[in-house]
Image (tube, rainbow, N blue to C red):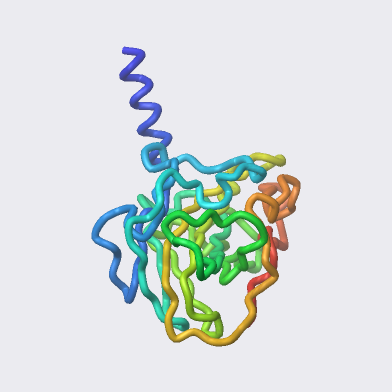
Length: 232
């Protein structure tokens, strides 16, 4: 009976959470999980990362990817959210260029190598910010996507998606971060210099306003944590 109860609790917990196991390229999702996307430690539990000082903030990685996807600069790159983005909050996309002499399958993106490529942030309505889909465009979606910056240099990159769940973030440490990293080769790129570059861990502080949520009084502004989106 205790074993059955534990299984039911795990199932309920997993259903409430999510992961990002597949890429979507040219509108088509990869046929299997964990191909170009490095397998994450929550592949069974769907649990998020809560310690922003943990190395898990890089890629939450359990295994390297088995393939490298190809996408052109200026094209849309998406991630499948399994089962859906079931907690409200922003969804952000970071990119880190793999050094020319490194193997994309084993490269560890430590240090100041990440730039923010896009952010699906809050939309303020006439009554301020709420915890509903009207405020958070990515909330309850099964796919999230962004446009590869047109001027990003060609080459191999890790592309990091993160969903910051704010439903239990009334105090520091309450935010849950769901993330994955995909292995991608960008073609037809430009000559931009992406930045500012940040590190994971390091880019976020548990006291960042963007990692704390107030249901009351109703918030009238929100700024996601991390650097600004590169406007290259």
